[in-house]
Length: 134
Image 1: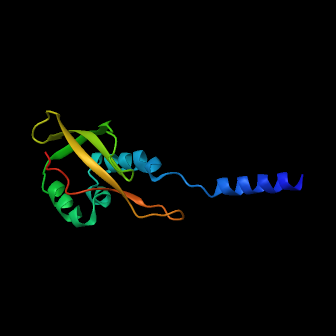
Image 2: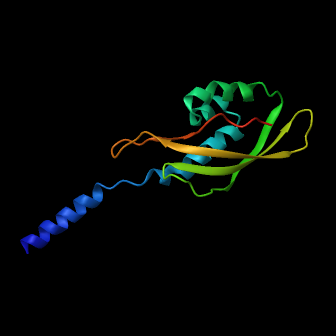
Image 3: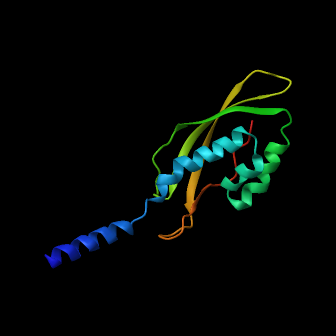
């Protein structure tokens, strides 16, 4: 009976030590980025870009006068070649004043999971420079 209790305690404690794979947070991070971009909160959206490309990302969007983004949506998530990497196709609906015609642009983004370990969460960042827009 004592062995059964010890075994049960070990199994429960071992289960508590397991953490979710980093890919579990990818959808949430991608949606956070899309929401920041949709709101044109460019400085906050830039935190999802690799540090060396953030300044160019901010300049790219702040120089687009009259830009209004109406929707950002993920249309595909192809399988990744490496586990800490995810690729996605994103559609951005936008218009630039004085035009009110909504245009759609597809963008391919590659995300990479950076840092983190068993005790500290890492973060998903978009690899490379953001594609030219619009």
